[in-house]
Length: 297
Ligand code: PAF
Image (cartoon, rainbow, N blue to C red; front, side, top):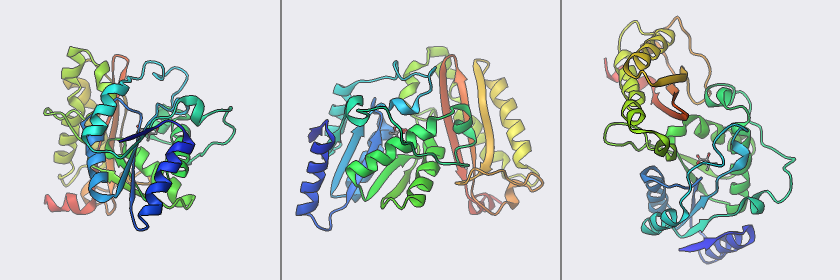
């Protein structure tokens, strides 16, 4: 496994592969490190589908707000490299901040509308930082495919829109969320939870199961489902503090018709939520396709 910390070195490593493998596929897994099984599943998928897998580990200061957890974001490079080695990653790109942002940044990638709601509304500027760093990484690595976890479904939608709008020649591959045995979605931020919070954090995935159940009813509208989920979370998890619970079209994240039952909605939609436990903000979501809801009839 090659470990590269500068842009020139990683570009040379990818170029060397490409020059020897004209038809070879380069798969890319961008991460902020503190890797877990969710990241491992992305690396495995890339390994299975690509001739070369590049993993980046970079805690991107641009996507954290002034009062967010950039400084205390969990980091463990030694463990990350061990995990990447186990997954047979070919190249790890782990640049210092100075390498990615040697001068004050004057150019940002702003993706509109799809960033207006959900985490975009709660974390102003977050997706400008994500769009900027991901487009830089795409230009540096030049992958054919990039693998992203659907736990961050809005991020997947934002990056897919950005690559489409800017004609960045990379296929965005959304991958299923990986969960703990009790349903909690894996996240590097789960380490912040204390014991009581960890027990109650399962309410997110339970609420999503409830959403699946409720959406099969003839009368459940986006608004009624949202209301029931808010009530469910509040009652089942007294330590929770809801940031948002939304039922929206996906991937555009637009309002759904509230006069129609979800069963009658002829587009994909998402139930997305962000819930705080103490200072830890967790997100989770479930995607529904019109076919999927109908198949429960
Ligand atoms: O999902 C993440 O870990 C980050 O937002 C990403 C895509 C690596 C950009 O910093």
